[in-house]
Length: 267
Image 1 (cartoon, rainbow, N blue to C red):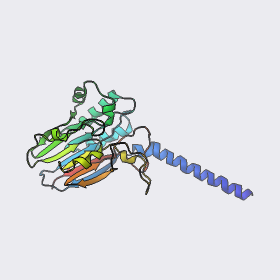
Image 2: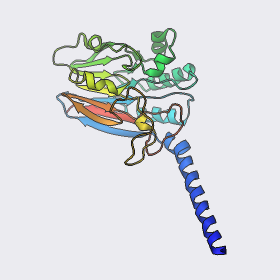
Image 3: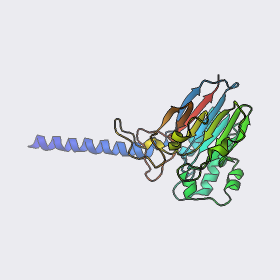
Image 4: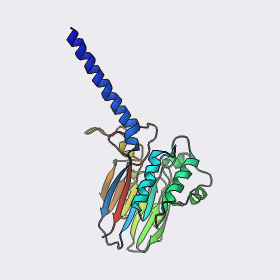
């Protein structure tokens, strides 16, 4: 009897220790380990173009995670930074979002920092939205596009799930033969829009936030469609779905590190 009770206590102690470890990992360790995912698209662009995609910042504090984003951008020095929506977090901390965006802009990517709306921007609309981003040093794209360098067109859409995305407007004016890059937040839009551009950069899914092998992601918001994270290809278009930086509702990540995608297009 004594040995049985001792074994039972040891078993419960080990279980409690494992639960504590998983909780610490999910709440404090993994959410602050920003991972850089590097990818290359072989293409005719010369010189190559390097883009750092940041999505789902969900800024609440200007803390360790945000400072790590700045450090990575300073280290990698991409040609362009693309922010694909959901910069604000629970509580609508617009002043802190402004500080983080200003710090991102201060890393001085040669072709600038470009931002589109996500579902959170549509749920918590900013007054004087364009002026807000301009004052932070960020270019705001709302169903419009621009030639960022000869032969490369960048378009940005309103969030397709919660706003009014107009791809035709964003591509209007793109020169024939230009490499067309489109930024939007919710990746489910890829199924209906693929074939009209070369590359889409999206977010929204957070990679599910918790990823258990062989089990479907517990948390996928509307607008994710069949997409979770990483690369997808359809009708000649490619899409990258980033896991993003922050979280919403549940402040956890498990087996799903925050991510900055650094993508190089060219020879």
